[in-house]
View 1 (cartoon, rainbow over the protein chains, first blue to last red):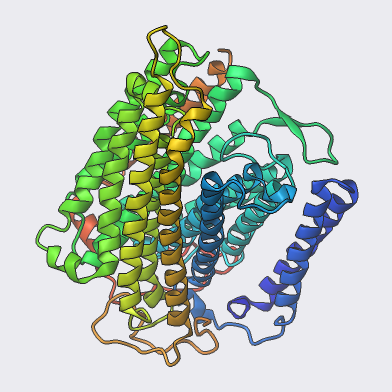
View 2 (cartoon, rainbow over the protein chains, first blue to last red):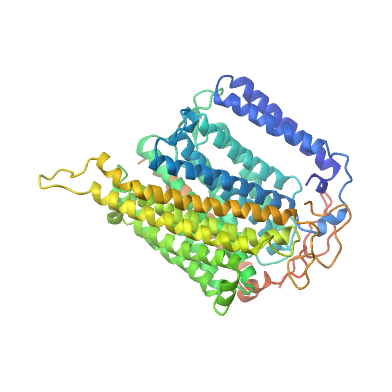
Length: 551
Length: 69
């Protein structure tokens, strides 16, 4: 990795890491006795570790100029590995908190192990750690290939990747120490938020600069999805995290909005995080890797562009459907509901476009588990977007809101759509990036497919059942016109479903472990083989001297 | 609902950005060869950047062989 940088670039990297360590020192000094101080030490530790990693190789031979004749894949490779690590961590914590709901005694008597602290580690771990790294890694890959241009910077891709992971680490460790600004999916405190703004703007600039130097005149539709993801997430993150620190020495702040204003901002952010983080970016993945894997162009390119603009213009208005029957003005709720229902059109056109691409190639789906991952992802995308539009309708929402149905809906999207398209893309891209003939074991890919599918189905069915039972019990009246069940009485009937959910989640986690093992063994496989007749390999020239893609 | 004074303009601005990007797309000929655009991602026998590969000097000419079609 370091070998791909010139000595001057290595020096710049060391200066940047030195500055980061100094910033960490200031944080540690200012935040004595506060979680912010601990975060200062984490920053120092991370910066110094990387400082010595770079420093120990500073006088290694420099790469030849021919590095510019190849794509810059080192950040993508590291991003994939980091995504897998976060997947295992985030999903393992998820299984633990699922277990806590069924067996509350499955805990240890420590503040960090309480449900309220572990749950955001799970959500941030899988959304930002796993999803975010997967998006950064695949966006670098897809952008370079579709633009036929190398990334515009040598250090900035590393800055984006490592900086983003530092944010994730600050987030996760902060939750364990009780740091939170109590906004779902936006829990990290002010200094972590400011840091993410810096990282994210660098990401956007890097993306735009690389596009500006493209050799292919047309900007492929996947890039539009990735661009929308980067741009909109930046705006959402900034607006939702406007806050005033209580003092500059602690991890505490107050949002500038309060009450229903804050709720509206939060769900404007929250739903668009689903839209642009968990949908747009992953659609970018789908629109590149599915056609590549199926070896046929997308069914209708025109439709893919129409659905892109449809999603872009509709999604941003849908957030207020999270606040049905609240103090939010009725017309704002109706606005959110209307746009949510309209969203079904562009969402289903993407799902249909993906499935119709396989017309005449369904035998490949039968034979190739990697393609099956992507197809199943498109199916779940269609299912969960339909469910989403349906749940956003006010009358349906009165039954489903605050119940486990919402949790089931989220996981049918997160497991069935986001995770499956990611794993499919990883299996497609790992052999290409590491110059391997194929994955270490196709049987393990097949095994992973069935583990993931069964885990998702068990999970989602369990939550549908428990959610609807909950919703119905909460709205049952007796003859006297009062509620038939107290809240406590509605909890014991959930038990079997909570156990089933834990089983489903554990199967999915097992699948992620299988993927990790398989990808790791693929990377470690010795003697890279150069297959004939497989595209996307730089097979026509021997690797430039001293610039062999690192292991 | 004073926050809508902020959120609605921000949302409109994002929409406007999208609209400008879309109009730019239409005018710059991005949508003139849709089937070709869909096919071209499948053609990459050389997994390497296209064009003359002069390593970009820090402030040198832009590394691009963009051709007008």
